[in-house]
Image (cartoon, rainbow, N blue to C red; front, top):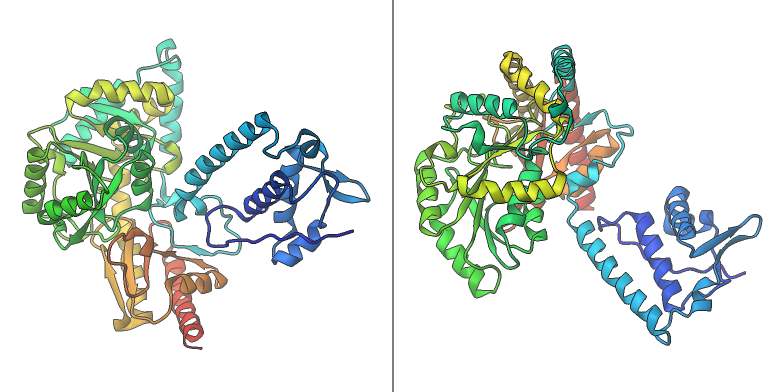
Length: 509
């Protein structure tokens, strides 16, 4: 029995390894390289050949069996079914060739979607294992959340529920919640907003997705900060847009470079005149810069002159530890050029999936039409509970408590980094938010450092992928600290130092 099977794995792809095995065997069957009745290697043998866990190979075989490509005969082994050869998957059969072509097109679409997965999205599916310290950013302190108060708000929302609350509600969301959000933004972000301008969304991501669908056509340009979050870039790219990256300095995105960057993009055929400008002015992601007032005014003027919409993502403005807190960019907007996006994921908890967007009045009908088609409405009871949580003052008290807690954890992280690395470490964005960007003066590769840190039970996140233009010459990492105790932070940074030393030794050998 011949058990030879050539499988080549690309471990740098975001496509899972079991999926790669499945795809290559299926392709071999369709191409005729494997025929009905041909045996496949035992899972243990193939796993050993590929240096994988047997469960990975078994998952691929089971998927192929479920789709009818393989049959597993007890005591005999695994074989290609005869169905494919009987129906002829070669080009001799026009119907089967058409099916194969459609299958290839679907496969390409799936590949495109998988290629848009970011490192953060992949990490969502990775179990904790032996990790004792995970520096993931944007994660609130679970243990400090006032669950009793939230449970009470939920119970009250359930008790006071009406048939209207429990039925299909308005796409724009709960009016009481929109009222409370408007009140909050008027007092804390200086935005003169009413409930009628606010639409509740399933987090900030849905707001961005709907804006992309509504505003962008294939080839349209989107100006974005460089560096920025890769998830946001891919949302716009998936809509067919061309990204126009613009560098960020100590005052924020360099508006004076817009015309040059747009012209360069047009000359290379990558992007028309931009329709959208995406910025994070309160706490630039990931550098942490706060956009200056002069730069904000300059940005608003450019958008008005070029008929572009500014998307202001105010993802963590509640937490600021040093320096003055500037009001939102939307508070300066007098020409309806800003769509302001906020979320409760980093303040309360991500599973709540409640965000919101403030839109120029002319855009509200179109946005609601797309949202109605996408999900009809956001969960009503959670919205009513959140409205009460805001109205009762519990939200404001929670934010105040978290500011003190996170300030302490931030100081612990910064002190530990300086203690372990001394002058070899630079930090960015520590004045606010829930993370710092860390640059190490080291010849080691950042991915090697991250891999070594994982062996010590610490998960850290390389940050080079956030940069489009000039990539960092030194290893950079995004370290979140909000959900880690001071003990974890100290031990975690020590482990990073050991990991960096290991990776440096490896790079010099």
